[in-house]
Image (cartoon, rainbow, N blue to C red; front, side, top):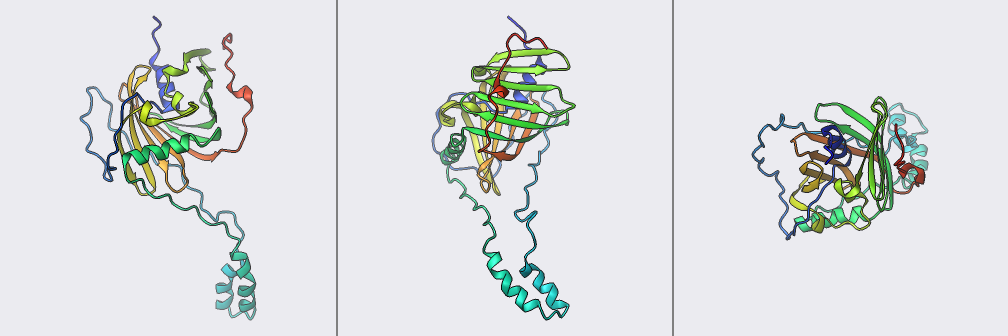
Length: 283
């Protein structure tokens, strides 16, 4: 039997950040306060840091200043044109795009899980940027592409030399610097939960908790089917943007990796060639 290098397992765990093992779930109240920390495992690394989410773009960034915004300054300067300018600016104010409405926080754990199910099943294609923080504190960035069912691609920006591709049945981890390509069944990786045709976390995973902190809904999951053993995953869903914002993975060795998403689009189409694995390729 082939021994899987820990480096490869870490790359898979870090990139995908998802995993759920089957277990029933009953409706329970949300824990609105963080649960007590579990007893750390032996030889577990230092306590993980809190990973900040990517900054949110201000709603009016890049918009031209209206005459109404300039009116107070004109009045202070004693300009006789201040009043007419304010009147002509009123119609422009009505054209401003309304801000997104915050979704109501789920009242039960079951409702929280259903909120995530609805989101994960709401799109066929997804593109965006990601920022990844590894256990050693190293920061990586790149692009993520999803085409459901079954296809995904992680492209890391230089100096990283890794790329991860799922073609619907297999997952390939390529390292251009080392000249390697390792291929696994998609069922061996947590990636299957992002690209499954129909997602149901109640049937796929062991839900260990859910909580709401401000605008962020967090759902905690244990995955017993990933390479190397059980992983612990926290999914963070933005109730205002109505999108997945971050996942945090603690792998079977106890190391934590966080991946934050931003600039997400559900409309752009991806070239099918991005999801092709050359099984005969030797890098």
